[in-house]
Length: 142
Image 1 (cartoon, one colour):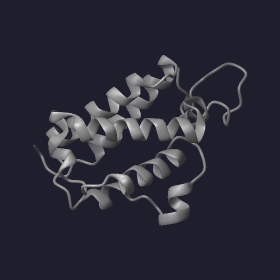
Image 2 (cartoon, helix red, strand yellow; image 1 turned 90 degrees about the horizontal axis):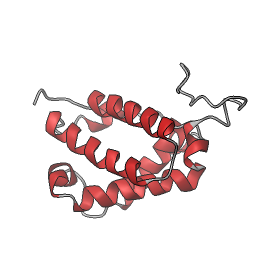
Image 3 (spheres, helix red, strand yellow; image 1 turned 90 degrees about the vertical axis):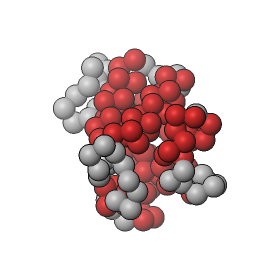
Image 4 (tube, one colour; image 1 turned 180 degrees about the vertical axis):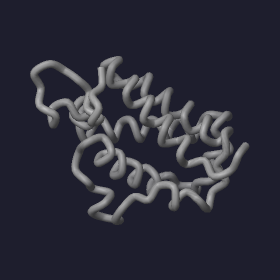
């Protein structure tokens, strides 16, 4: 179950202990999720369109997503400390993101989530939040 403040409920634990960041395994868990996500994007034929929006090397994208997700999941605000406010939608406006691109991104993230060890509550919570974020990035109708 998830709480209104974005915390995964687990009786008797403090909010900090229930943060998705802690529950996924902290820095290591976030790094594993990000690396698997980009490995899938880099190899899945159905992700070719979104992969083409990235430079040949995914190193910078991996690092930025890792920093962003660390704070987004309730860990240290590493992305903000380095780059300032994320302004995700504005940063993605140069890229044509429609339903197909959103769906490809979600498929890659869903697979990465499915392959990582975590509770079903956490997986469902993250899947819901990632879907909402991916939909918010859309900047064209199809």
